[in-house]
Image (cartoon, rainbow, N blue to C red; front, side, top):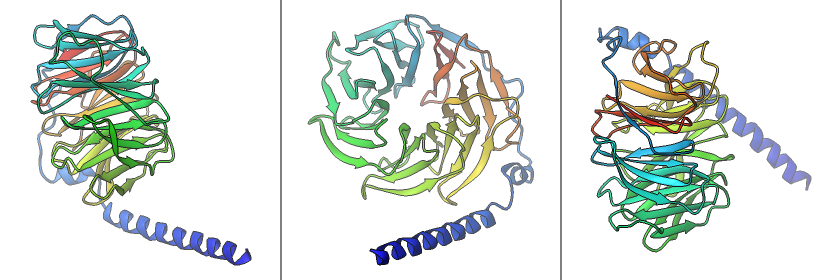
Length: 350
C-alpha cells in the first residue's frame, strides 16, 4: 500500500513539473498584446459610432426569452421562452411562421439545422433534447426525443440533418444520431456543468465547449477525445463561439470578461473586460469578418468589442433591453444581429 502512495506522490510531482513547463512555453509565446501587434499594421478603427440601428422588434413571447438561433438563410429565427413555446419568426416581416408548444416550459436552449432548415431542436430542465420537423404542419409533437443525459440540457447545436451535439449539467456532451435516437459519442472530461458548445465552421468533426469548471475544451469527434484545454477564466464559462475562420474561439464568463483563444498557438490572445463591468456574460457572437465580438450581459447591455484593439475599451454599446440579455447571434450572412432578453423581446439590429 505504501508503494502505491509513493507512486501517486511521484506522479503528482511529475504533473506539476509538466504544467510548469507548459506555462513557461505559453508565457514565452505571449510576448506581445494584440493591440501592440495591430498597431504596426496601421489598421482602421471600428467606425464610432457605428451605423447600427434597431430594425425589428419581435413581440410574441409572454415569458423570459432564454435562447435564439438563426436559420441558414438569415431570414428565419427560432426562439425559446419560459412561456413554454418555440416560435419561428420571419425576421424580415416580423411575422410568426410557426409556434410549437413544449411539454416542459423550462427550456434553456434552441437551435436551427443549418443545411436545409427543416429541423429545430430545444432542451432544458426536462433533460431531453426534442427535435421538431417544421416542414410538417402543424408542428405539435416532437419527431424525436433524445434521452441519455442525467442533467439539464444547456445547449444544443446541429452538425447536419442527421446529427446533433448536446451539452448538459451532467458535465458531458453527447453526439446523437437523430434518426435512431442513439448516442454515438460521449465527451466527459469536464468537471462541472457544460454550458455551451460551438461547432467549427470549417471542420464539422471539431467543436468547442465551455463549462462552469472555468475551462474551454476542444474536441475531435473522430477520436472521441479532448485535444485542447484552454484555461484563463476565473469563473464559470457561460458561452463559446467559434471565430469565422475556425482557428480561434471566443468565450464569455461570470468573471465579467470575454476572451479570445487561438487554437494554433494554444493560448489566449486577447481579453475583453473593463473595471466598470461587474456582471457576467450570457452570450457571445462574432461578426462575419471576426473583427467585432458581440457580448450580452446580465446588466441589460450588449457590448461590441474590437477583437484587434485594446482589451479594456469597448468599440460601442447597443441600446439596452429592459432586462437581462440572455442570448444573441449574428446571422450567417453577417448582415444582422439578434438579441433576446428576459424582457420577452427579441430585437434585430443592422
